[in-house]
Each structure stands twice: as C-alpha cells, then as structure tokens.
Amino acid sequence: MLAHNAIRMEIEEMIQALEASKKRGGIQKWEIACVTKAWKTHYLHVHSHHSNKDAMLMPYLETRISYPDKLTSDHKELVTKLDRINAVVESLGQKEEGDSVTELVGAFREYQGLMLPHLKEEEVSRAYFEPPEIGEITQRILASAGAPKVEMGSFIVCQGINGFRNGFMECPIQTMRC
Image (tube, rainbow, N blue to C red):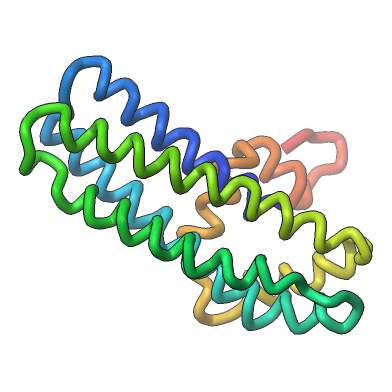
C-alpha cells in the first residue's frame, strides 16, 4: 500500500508543479531540470514496482487467487503512457513557451487516469491475504539487490519523516518519541 501511495503522491505533486508553471505561461530552465530529475526518479520507481510485482508478488498471489489478466495487460498501456511522458519531458523548453507544459500536464492526467484505477484494482486483489503475509513479500522486495534507492526514498517522503521514524525505526529510549 505504501508503494502505491508513493506513486499516487509523485503523480499528484508533479501535476501540481506543472500546473503552477502553466499558470505563469511557461517553464523556466531551472524548473526543466527539476521536472526532468523528478520524472526520471518516478519512471524508475514505476518500472521497478511493476518488475517486482510481476517477479515476486504475483506468483505468491496466484497461490490463492486467479490474478486478473487485465492487471498485467494494463502494464503495456501504462508503459505507453510513461514513454509518451518521457518524450514530452525530453522536449521541454524546445517548443514555444507554455506548449510543452500544457502537453505534459495533459499526458500526466491521462497517465493518472489509467494508473490510479490500476493501483486500486491491485489493492483489491490482496483482499484474500493478511497484511503480515504481504509484508513478508514486501520485505523480500525491499531487501533484493536490484531494489532502487528511489523506491525507499519515495516511501519516506510519502509517509513523512516522523511517520517513517515511528513506523519503521525502533526508538532507542522507550520514554522518547522518535
């Protein structure tokens, strides 16, 4: 669930940032650098999330449920949306002021329109599993050698630093609230 919330947060915050640029009528060079970096991080996060789900989580889920084909086929359409956004991000600043941002906001909204229901459907597929069961798989995914650091960073940002500390880090002194 935290991974999905992080993906939702990244999409929403990117749209908000782009809308702010759009209101000003264009995007500045420093904003292009920020958007490009944030996008590359999100792109890596989503690809890693889907790879991990396909390789580790789906086989486990299929021990108890018939995993809907639609959720796997959605990935192809999501990759198409990701590639479109990637192309627009790479073209930022090369078109007339405002055009790229308007196009990018539209591409992000299309992507959001597909991704959010997809994440919800994935979450529903876990209804036949207890949280500790899913937690074991999640821990294996996070511990895997190929897990990108951006995923953990996204989790921390999404949860908030205090939520992360209180939820994942044991406080060394019991009377202290970390």
